Length: 96
Figure 1 (cartoon, rainbow, N blue to C red):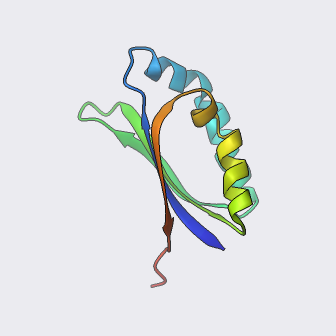
Figure 2: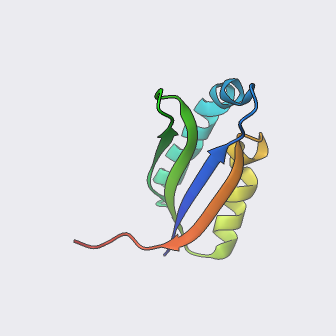
């Protein structure tokens, strides 16, 4: 499987945090679905100095680029404009 590290930084407008909270459960449900299908490796929120969520990091894996593209098209933090910038890089979890 091809692994990817995905870093998404939230928009900085005043309403972003409330938008994030409004769709967060849907995002977490999506992560559970990814895990059930073997696509989710790990993920979590990026926090600011006050402990407020300002972004996310996920390590996902897909058999094909099409799988990654399908995830991007359906990820609610992308479609609902929570993440302003998204960086996706090939990644490999270390075998130790």
